[in-house]
Image 1 (cartoon, rainbow, N blue to C red):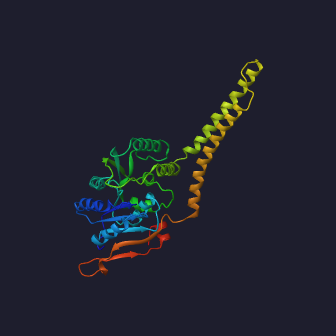
Image 2 (cartoon, one colour):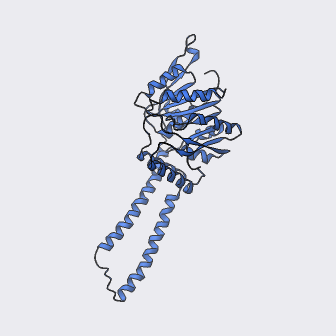
Image 3 (cartoon, helix red, strand yellow):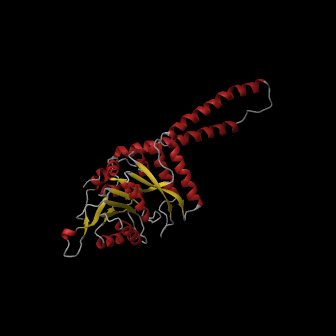
Length: 340
């Protein structure tokens, strides 16, 4: 690409074959209206449907499209990270490929960026086409994260946001595993603001965030930005110790008074032991989550492995044509440093 893009759009893709052409059409219409050079960086996160073929075809038709093809599925947050690693624009927009986040909102993000803001996040005022359970758990998650984390993460926001080049460079220097991008962008700081929008129904296909992935994502967010779960263990142990101290004189007085209340038998002991054991196992689980994060960091594996990159190479193409290149990349280098 001869002209360095001013705007980059990063779109992670996982089994979104029916949506890809419509995503490109709407993004191209919006970005062309800005009059600025732009690029679309799509990250194929191990799709096993026809998404890869659709993206190959886009590269052949539009030289502004680049595809980072993962060797397997590494997860949404790592796919976003790969897109940020390969984005070259002064302003980088992160958007999901399912079209629930309308590409037309990008114009509002760009307007705030031109006013001098370096992070512009999109706040969901309404979530259409989602079940009551999804809405309830999402609302609960955002407010829980807001209250217990050590950074001010705006509520009702996803990864749909615009990042200035300075912010992107700072994010690319942070190579921690178990990533929570919206938390990292809040932690970094800089001038931040939000705009509201209505989240739409999926254009096609099914959600890629079932309950299991939602729970795992929530654990990554909580353990990545808060020590509150570990602190809860201290409060719980103090409460249990206080109850035990209070119970000793109560039981002694009841026995000395010759009360008819019976303390014999194993039932009470078993119930108390089960209660205490459940608390212990729960906090062992919490502690294990933090230990697992340490283990992930110590191993120093790359965040993702790139099989190849598909992009247009105008210089090597024939007259009036383009050439699609499957470029092999040192996966460890890209996954760790974002350079190649």
